[in-house]
Length: 566
Length: 47
Image 1 (cartoon, chains in turn green, cyan):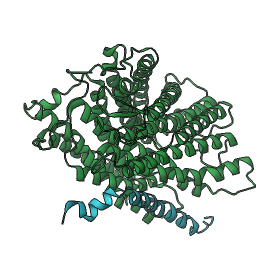
Image 2 (cartoon, rainbow over the protein chains, first blue to last red):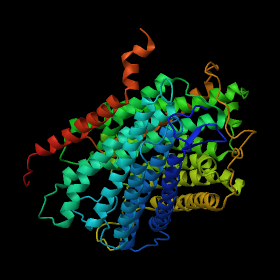
Image 3 (cartoon, rainbow over the protein chains, first blue to last red):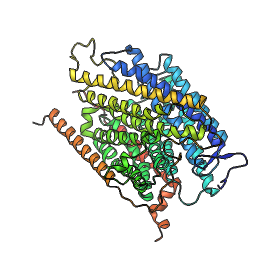
Image 4 (tube, rainbow over the protein chains, first blue to last red):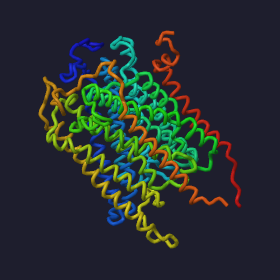
């Protein structure tokens, strides 16, 4: 194996893949991954408390603690868990996959420490009880200065991690540690890093003046409309970083679990370029009912230009399952349209988690995202539970489940520890994926009845005029609660399995990891000239498109019912 | 034309240009245009 630009004793060879592992990068992959799981646990505890509060039959928390817990949940799940994990993914991609050393150990330390201190600061200030402003912290809601300072520290830390990533791909190119184009997974990670830059810049532009304003509102005047537009340049774009990271992980897991290759490198890379150029415009979805900006801005940013990013998602939505089908057919599973799918390695949690993430994100998140992002339809759905119903199948059923699936390879290969209870590992993605899907369906349909998001009491207790929602909404909220409990059990199981493996698992150092299925841990990639037969994927894609058309026009019909034109 | 010389291929392989475009396009289309819209919003009057 070529040693790339590594110094003496700065790398090891992975016994499972044969790939070089930069020891400095490995240290920070571990540190960031451990922090990610800790913040995932904090967010998960908040999640179950919230689910049991919005389930009217339980209604667990008081109003004060509901909003406090919702603030903790949003920040720990959407920002801390995801960002720590993504920094770990970036370090892995730019070192191991490019055969390069990490550019700067000092920068990696600074990044990790700033993010950790910032995240702890934010959580402490929320728990002090004077920062119940939710993730969005819309002004004039005001938190303690420490809350904003913590977010700034996390953002600066993450930006340093991203800069370290770019420096590493620069020195890898300079030192010619790889030949030709970057591997697809690194290309996707680069797209994620580019989107992270614009995201974090928006974070700085929003949070620094807000921090000053929180110290003394007389020092600076903040316009709520300005804040909302600029904040969503941070809030929504950070979720597009997730999309790129998740798609990259899909390609990686397709490769290691079935030997899949992207069926067309140029098309797949082109889709990532479309993400880089256009996906961030989707932030405008959140401003669709704001009066301060006109329809031209709204329609351009959410429709004409943003649909180029939707095109990119549809490309990946075809090429990722197609890569699995091509590999499976090459490996002998040729029966019928779906023999390749039925005979896929479903006992491998790396595969089942990845494929469930793909299906949940595509069918649940993709379809609802485009529909809710349509200006006219959005007016029915804005600020209802349909919105969190959408992003719980994208960020949780999609991104988080993909990250979980990857963890079933990260722990044995980077931490060099084996999982206990393989049977529980095999059911965990199903439990979590199934639970979050039921949860999101319950949320979305309750939202269709008009149930608002971010509201403590669906029955509006004490209100003089409001008569409450009907029994139908309560049924869906109950289904949401049951789904939330199942998903929580799946998430808790994941954390227990990971913690037991990392801290008490049997070491596999010196040998390959135990395979999840078959004889080898990593399935050999199929040749480049393998036949590209994808009839099963074509059927799945057609089902997705028909589902989208039905859902889209059902919403227009619904809009025509509530919006009488006389 | 060799595949490596194709302008789209060159664009896709130039990470630094993609970084600049990835920052500039959303900043202009979403953020700056949005700020201009807000700056030009007229004050509403009471009905």
